[in-house]
Image 1: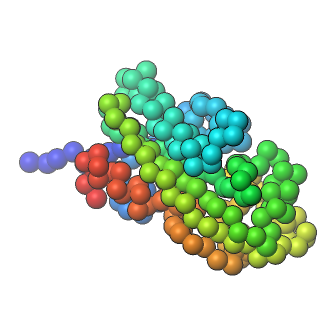
Image 2 (image 1 turned 90 degrees about the horizontal axis):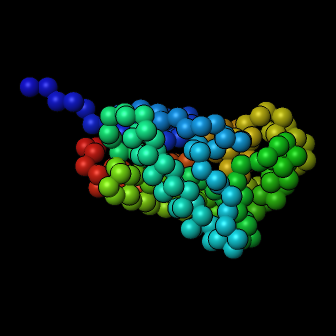
Length: 206
C-alpha cells in the first residue's frame, strides 16, 4: 500500500530557502504572494514598529507570513498542508538593516558593515491554521575592511539588491567575511536546525 509523501508550503520567493529545504529532503510547494517592493516575500507590511526590538521584529514578520499563507490556502481552496515562512534581517548598533532600497543604499550599508561585526537574525515559523510556532536563530558575522572600489564592484554585480544587509554569504561576498559565529544556513536565510525542530513538531518525517 503506497503512502502520499508529506508536503508543506514554502511562503517565500527566496531561491536560497528552496535550495536549503531540498538539502534536507523536504517536499514542498511554493506559495506565491502578491509581489512587493524590493522582493518582500508576502503581502505584509515589513516596516518596523517604533522602538521595536530586532528579535521581536524578525519573529513578527515570520509569524505574519506563515499565518497569511494559511489564509491564502483557504482563499484559493488549495490542499491543506503546513505553511513555512521565514524572515532575515541584520542588526548593527541597535539598528535594523533590511534589504537595500537602491544601489546607493546598498553602498551605504556595506560601508557601515566594513571592518565590523554585525548580527544576522532569521526567524522561521510554521502554521497549519490551528497552531503557529516559531524559532529564531541569531548569528554573528564579521566583515574585513572593504575598499570603496570593492564595494562599487560588488554593488555593480547586482547581488546585494534583494538580500538583507546588502550581501549574500553564499555568493561573492564570501571573500569579504573574516568570521562567522552561529548558523551558516541561518545567515543564508533558513536555519536548518531550527527548521527541522519545527517540522518535527508538526509531524513532518525527516
